[in-house]
Image (cartoon, rainbow, N blue to C red; front, side, top):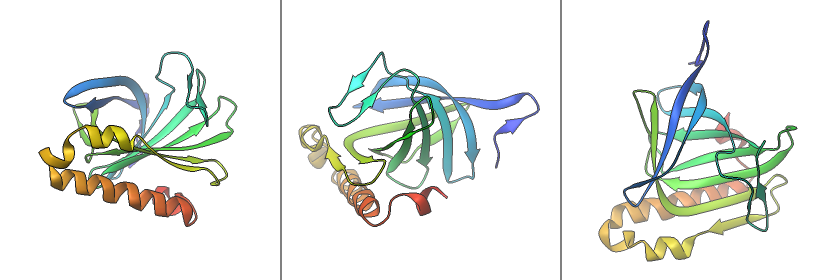
Length: 166
């Protein structure tokens, strides 16, 4: 389903929750919602430049973000203001919930970065995940999170996210 109307693109508020508290929220353009996957586009919502050493997110960058109601991750295509692909940043999350114009996602600490050319694949924040206590508090969710990271890692090494995002 397209999210555009005669009045222009539909808007949603993306809300990222971590450890029960709101981590960040930002407005986004709703691109599509097929009942399972929700796709939005938003400018970089961070304050200033965030330099990870292997990639920089900065004002002007555009994120096309894909969230699933039945999967434990989101995939974010990151482009420069000029449209050049920087890569894909993947968050391991509980399945997304869209209601009342708010897209709420719970971050489970694990992340994956895949460079534009696919040669740099990095599993991130595994130490934060271990320290979060999810393994003992909610072993089923922890297992789902690890399986999601493994799935995205394998997809990135076997040709990327094209089929997933088509």
